[in-house]
Amino acid sequence: MKDSGTSPPFLQSRGHALFEIGLVAAVVIGLIGTITACVASYQQGAQKSACIKRITEVQRGVRAYQAEQRLQAGDPLPLELKSGKALPFSTAPCCPQSGKAYVWENHIPVNGRPVVRCPHANQRGHIPSITEGW
Image (cartoon, rainbow, N blue to C red; front, side, top):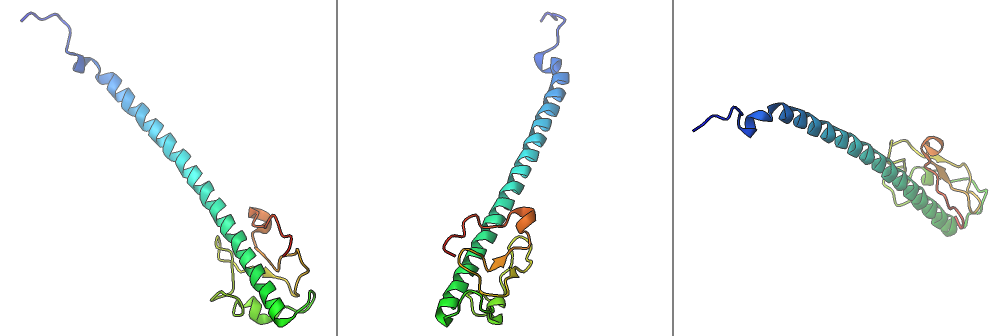
């Protein structure tokens, strides 16, 4: 066999292989960072939705209790509502994101006004957008 003076192709590309591995690693790290940011954003949105849903459930429970007990808007809010005992909750309702207790009104609110407010209402937007008919 005659030696042509060139080395086989797998020996010629060793420098390129290291560069390509580094490039692939950089792309994978970038994708992991993007996916992590997306998952965090999704979790925050899911927790916000869960909080607003819980506020809605509390509101419905209070309105059912109000109708059953024949309470009027402006009447004092009974303590058994704030503790969750008169509602379908085993404990006092709280924000699912932080576990902090909701801030309760002291009186039965007028229609359209929520009876509880999330402690994260201003910072994280845990506020129901529609409260008509509440």
